[in-house]
Image 1 (spheres, rainbow, N blue to C red):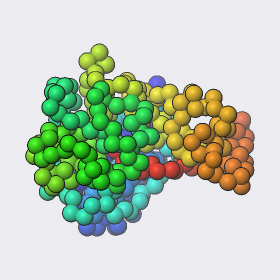
Image 2: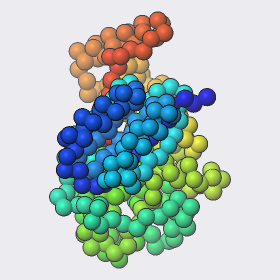
Image 3: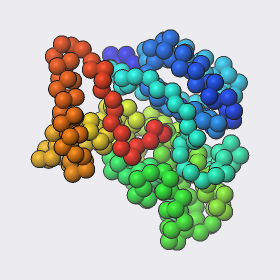
Image 4: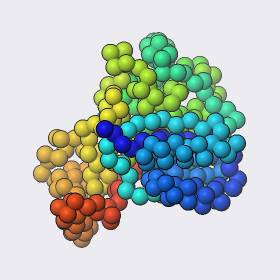
Length: 313
């Protein structure tokens, strides 16, 4: 039985007191042993958190008791083990970082398309379908016929739009991301650049996988998620990928068969970019993890490795 409820959430709204709000949310989560990451900025809230169902329902209700967050939506999935080791409530300049001043989804945003209507839209030949995620995500899976901007950071998306040949204000755009938040910013940006028809998948890939039967689906592969599950399949169950504990990049079975893969120490993508000193530290950390596992304990010093990933949905 899956005991942990995972909630991916975001909401764009003016939060001038976001610094003070951080203290409150941190206390509420710790009171119910909720773990994961919440990002707060003046433009809103974003994050993925997990806990037992009763505690999560209580916390989400507390969030929405703030009138500014009453319209907050979240997407749910389940896990047998907690997908997070600790709680982080962080302050940011943007809850999803694009780095373009003046882009405000509360003022202007693209047309939402519900998952049940998505297939019909993206099957139209004059629609340019854009995957707004980064390369380590798109390589796991994407929608049939999608264009991959091959970005390593969401900050690169505006430049891709500027450089993309054939894009005109008349181009019909459909875009998607994991949970919908990047498309809020991306669609707002494109409308500001003069594009006339910009659509985006409401609730993102996660909502599509939840709502659309697999036999009708136009999704191929798995979807990257920002927790220790690494990826989920079409049934929203943990997928086949594992994160490198040194750099955080997702690994396939083929990657783990590579000579440069050493569990907890290196992988084919980071082996040549880390010093021998760091590899030795990673090896010692892995030894401590193994010892804790033998004792039936969780190694609390384990931190999810970071690379170019951002905690966005």
